[in-house]
Image (cartoon, rainbow, N blue to C red; front, side, top):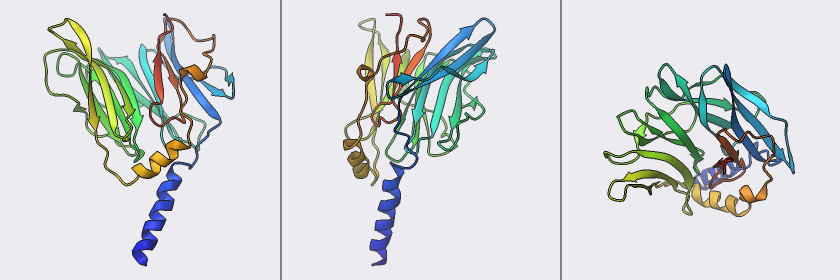
Length: 258
């Protein structure tokens, strides 16, 4: 009887994870870089209904900023990650915003890699752990690294693939149908002289998967075709379209120069 009660309590607590503090009124968010000669800003706009909010600066720096991305966890906490030039390197920076707050916390370095760290891509798994993948020249040619967190502490960066002598760039993270974490990236293929796609699957073994799949069946997964991109976005900037209520893939990089 006692063990059954524990199971019921665990089910209720875990099931509540997917609904707690979710603000479903915000359909999408845009993050982009607004650059001037003497300052660089990360801008944010939110889509409620069919109306985009006025652009808001959430971070300002004298350093050049590029490749931002945004993630929203299962409790509606947000994490913004971007690349920023700093003392001859391009480091990964991050800022958090709790679901209970309207303010972004102070920015901080995500890790101590002193190299070119670019193109971060994030995904939240069914245990509400945040994964970030990026390309780094930490050991020479670019490789794909990852780190993950289930709170405020990040794991030490680890390389996704085996050692090689070609560049590996532009990772994209998502969940597959089995709710495992998948990262795909471009790797240079020497025989063809072109970049080809590789991917790696991190299998997630947990009891929350079944309840998470149930929540997916009741959640609309939005895509770029569901929204109208506002005209105030700059044409020469890195822009990310973020769907905070999506579970499989939340953020899409936009190329507005096409």
